[in-house]
Amino acid sequence: MEIVSSVNELREKIMTWKKQGRKTGFVPTMGYLHEGHLSLVRESKRRSGVTVVSIFVNPKQFGPAEDYKVYPRDLERDRALLQREGVDLIFYPPVEVMYPEGYKTYVEVEDLQDRLCGKSRPGHFRGVCTVVLKLFNLVQPDEAYFGWKDAQQVIILRKMVEDLNLPVKIVPLPLVRDHDGLALSSRNTYLSPDERRAALVLKKSLDLAERLILDGEKDAHKVREKMIELIAAEPLARIDYVEVVNLNNLEPVEKLEGEALIALAVIIGRTRLIDNLRITSGGIEK
Image (tube, rainbow, N blue to C red; front, side):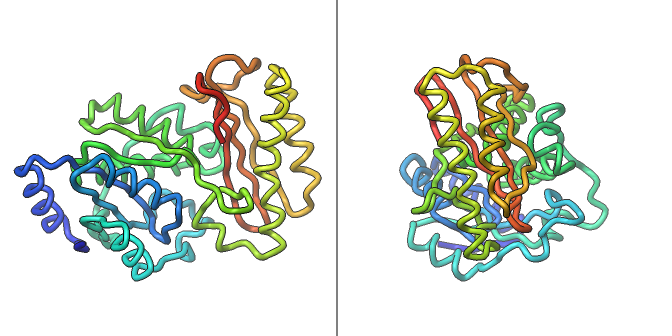
């Protein structure tokens, strides 16, 4: 496994693999890896001849009052995990490589970027799309792997790829949870023991939604209100949003018919956490 930090080094490796006809799988990350990230790596290893992982804490997707400076970082830990998984290459660029002085170009997916997390994090998905498009251009992957935990991100990136005719397939994989049911996130490290226990209210609210739906409830408003009621009873929780939307265009739905996404963002102490439940033709996935 190699670690490269420059564009020229990366392109040289990619060009060699392309000449060899090797299929490239790509997992973009911000590092401080957990089992959710590693599940993406393993799928890439299974499906691709070469697996590239990027580690880059992208300043363009953090707001001015967000946690960019304190976001957890540990390259040596990440390197050891990825070495064990058999990753071929880590791309670990400094900020000045990705955004040199005078940088002025950004990518936006209109409408989709302004819903759900986009309401409380303006500019977040502009930063996500910009860095992912840059990484796609550099790595030139055949497939790129993302977790359904960030469902809005998956939907937005799919649209970006479709609209810009990018030759890469977005492969979303199931959300991964810890032993207590909390969705895995690098930000979970911010939680105190009491906050960790309180954070389980996100999963409990989704479990409640699932029971209501399986019992025949089709009214999205009623499901949402029951979830809000449960979360509001947790003293350490503050709701950012709880929404029931169409799984493809993120528009609010009144009836739970067809494909839908129940998504929520809740602030526990000072930590903002997200989670979701998807209703598809295959059933309920969370």
